[in-house]
Image 1 (cartoon, rainbow, N blue to C red):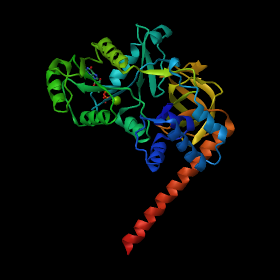
Image 2 (cartoon, rainbow, N blue to C red; image 1 turned 180 degrees about the horizontal axis):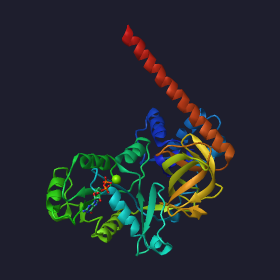
Image 3 (spheres, rainbow, N blue to C red; image 1 turned 90 degrees about the vertical axis):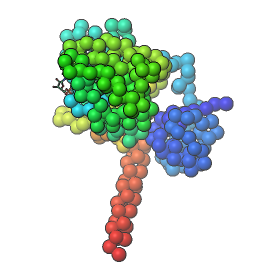
Length: 370
Ligand code: GDP
Ligand code: MG
């Protein structure tokens, strides 16, 4: 029988995964976002949304259900998306900079880089790795709070002279909660006080058992300063990516997530989008969060204009009608009418829930005065 994952169903309806899970719950079906449901159940959900989503026409729903797009034969390997986390001053930024400098394409092109919130490193092997470049845990948790699972792998940076600290533990907990594999980068190995064995011992008490101790966690000694161990770290990421069998269909309409967004003088709203599936092209009409737009320009992590961006590629997008938030979904739709409908519906839904929330607040205030 035909099945579809909850996430995929949500994507096709341009709805939040969490909302679809809730709707399923109401229908008595308890599933998580990554589980599959059968076509009949999916149809019920679509009707449920179609009923509420008055403005979405029947044909849209059909597109959702007939589903050409994610034909398995179209799935191709995609680059892993990596977030670097760890305690303050343990070298996250230094490591990201050092890794970025190892990009073979950027070296050829003269190494002019641009900060857009994420970048790709092209390895000599021809493969590449996408790094989320937004600092620290805030981005990770903010995105997760919005239901966006952007990261395939977490690189946990631990300074070899300092060991596991408070934010290291936080990072471990975030990664575990997100069920994302962890690779440990034991940094600052160039320092005379470096004590990688102590770091490995400390990891034990957080249930992270490194390979040398019979576990499965890969720990790579590195130095962002001397660049020692960086190729090993890249190789470990590649290996982990292979185990995860990361794949995406580049042929379909693009879907992704906003990594960063801001209003810029002269350019309007600008968003860095990490494409997760499909290919984003100039002129594409899209919905993102409560906003919509039409792609006016696509700019890559080297500041170059590009015509398109495929899976795992971060790209800066202009042509937005408003500024979305980090973690918002980004979905290409058929046309402006549909885009307007969805963004209006979402804005209205948000207004309603904001109102309900402030209403509740005032009721609580009233009660507390009684
Ligand atoms: P973040 O807060 O985790 O982003 O850490 P930073 O990258 O800003 O690094 C904090 C400090 O540690 C800076 O002074 C860096 O120069 C230094 N640092 C980072 N990596 C290394 C390293 O591998 N070796 C040495 N000796 N210093 C490092
Ligand atoms: Mg930093």
